[in-house]
Image (cartoon, rainbow, N blue to C red; front, side, top):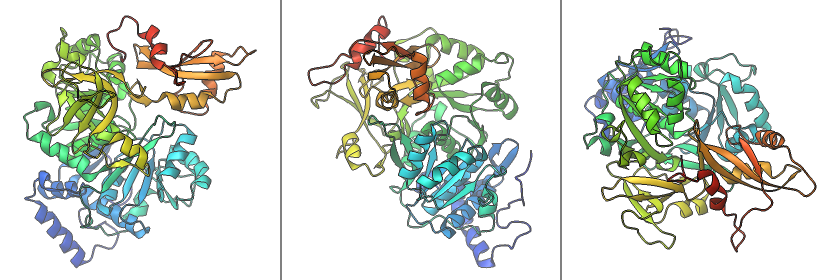
Length: 565
């Protein structure tokens, strides 16, 4: 495997540069020794995860990215240097930095380095449209932007409108077109490593993930150190083979880090002390290569991604002997797809249900409930993880008994701190007792299994991406031939749901559907833009004027037993 470009990093020094002073070296050695007998369930700071593994298994591989390998000892030391570099750039506890790029081992190095320094990291989804990226970069008030080379021009274009960004660093070791932007490894390499801040606590913010909102503007969900750590401790207390990890496990991180499914899954492997093989982006053929060449034992994918992998001509020729479990989320897995996946992969499957605001998974459908012949439980999301409470409430606030449909609410240590600088939105989502409204409509059965029936907030899930109608409608409304528009999700065999716009044309016009779609794509990400347009004389509304999306959706979902796919 190829080494990292530049001088090789070791636990206490960088070859060719001045070694750390004796006092600093001794302090770091003492820190590592003190962590040798520490259990992961005793720590409350994410940065200490690496200190534990550096003490207990320093030579264990932590990451592999496109031929480059990093041990836990080197990762612990390197992230200490990153923390020092952040401090040297004038950042203090609670300040923000942003990442704009695809997956990389350097992203997770920045994640842990920021965690040690008490800095909050904001990964920005690279698939978003330029105005959306600019909005997030400005809204989060990031003082620094870390960007991979392919997004350098985009980053340069947003800087004039984001005065909060004082410095840009080029990650992924690519050549920069902007000579005044330092490379990541050069930016931190000359600093001596520092330990995690002692004034960090579990409730302090660790990461801020943006999720689209019903107002058309994304909201920054603040997740804490405790959100990432406490759930693992509680889950480990209950025997769940699919959730048991060893240092021999090899995890594939293929989902984008701009989502909790990418960052959360990646952190799970690091927390376990396993080897994390990081894919720059999801690619079906690449996934097969990783499984065979790297001996992947666990991975997380959306059902649509599983379908793409199975469609690859090589899917039935790959050696899956080390593959133990595939975890999947964003939607239930169709029975026909499960049968094919079990036949080809020959591993266990476990559904994960959650959201950004719950730091990912709070409900799981275990492998033993996945029956190729089909069963009732496969129609559901599963049962709550240890420490997770669920309840169903109706519109009047009454707690509903098993079998009755209402809004799903949850309470646990997984729930977010709140939305960044949006107190009203936070209060509307999480009550004073800590119950979080998911926006999903569903019911619990007598055994505590959760079944999702519809989405209270009209969210559309297409290919594991969340799309909110109001955001798409806002992008379409400016079209000169559109008088009114309502956006809904309709069934789609490939993506689960597809975005459809129902349009009322302005009098005297005959809009071209392709023109409307192209107009929307110029203002929002392509995956959010409608895939099809239907025209209607008037939108159905209730007496108060609210659009009746349920009535618009009904014809497309006719004959199905639930209004999500």
